[in-house]
Length: 200
Image 1 (cartoon, rainbow, N blue to C red):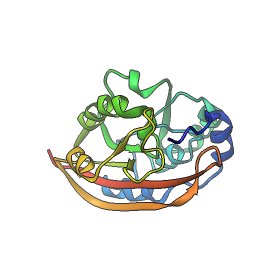
Image 2 (cartoon, rainbow, N blue to C red):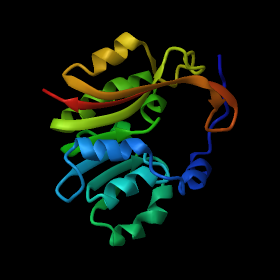
Image 3 (tube, one colour):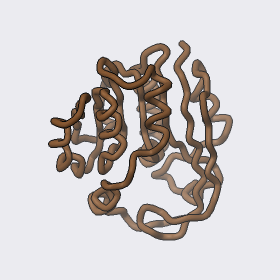
Image 4 (cartoon, helix red, strand yellow):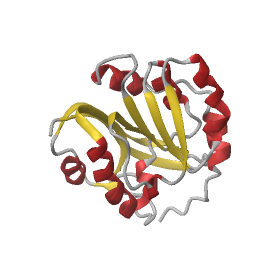
């Protein structure tokens, strides 16, 4: 069983804050109708804010959730954007109801909520997503080296398929390779990244 040390999320997020936004952010915005005001995105586990800020640069209002407050240091950038970030310094598992959204986004964060946390938050997130809206999330598969950890959610292909009932998958990528964990320890990643549109 992998017993990786506790991660210093503030240090990690601060070091990652300057990274470019992920390509899937642009894909999600385009799938949701393109740049411009009037659209809302939810970002779970916003971290250093690279992706949340890109959504805001493209005109979306972003509700960003994280237990670490690294992103607050960058909110002054709101003034130079057509969109805006509303930062919620809290555990997303404690949210009773998310705002209605055109995009739901989470990079690597949902599995870190644990099996129970993921089961509880998923219907809240998909319920907040408007019909025709898009969801872009990373989930961990059964081959991930953290699969035996009770505090991290890993899922079978069948379980992931069930989660996306009522959606049309627009893009799916699978990362199944050795690499480094957030704490720089060696680990095997099995990450299923899905971009999908809510149909019903």
